[in-house]
Length: 290
Image (cartoon, rainbow, N blue to C red):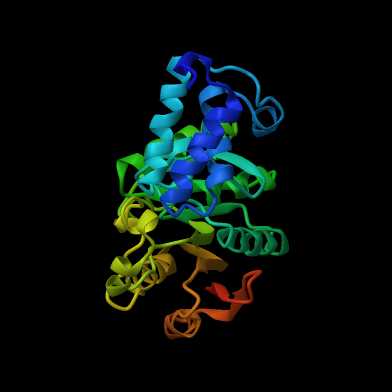
């Protein structure tokens, strides 16, 4: 067998494939390509087209360290420390929820209402990595977005993404228990948008290993019925929303009726439930203040 310093890209990939395949990782080929590309600071196409290029021992060892993290079910995006959302690249890390494609439905719904109603002042509560508020900022020209989260890691990652996307002049992030900071400082918004924790408490332990073992439970756990954060955000939003202001929530696929009822009971109108690309209920929205 060749020495470490003589191993080439093809041989490293083959060994990585075997390790991850035996660990039951379905995406073992793509994951190994991405991990080796990260170590070599190349793109995936380079990895695929240059299998005969030798890799030195230090880089090979770094690659296998990452492969072993993935073998232990650490999500690939945490290892890569980046992900794509709405066509943009974002920084992420352990301690923030990994962005899902389903959340793009939330952003698209928010953008439609922002354009339709000429909304300017937007609030992203439970912002995590800031993907929702920053995507809105990227895809509009004259909005101002405040992002709120209670945990330090999300605040740090959101700040890094604001700088990454050169939006410091229009997007800001604050530490806050939901909307308390905004209320205490007399802020007003045309729209509140949120992907809050909404998984029922008893369901957490049944989630896939890479989710329950690595993603922050504080960003997943919506309480006994999954609705705790909707109740609190709806109540606080009534203090903050301007006339004919909007609220837009991501929801669990089985929570549409309950969240719509919460909005109705709190005086919201024009309430709708929107499905995602899989045909599942994904977004609930409404208006407040005639």
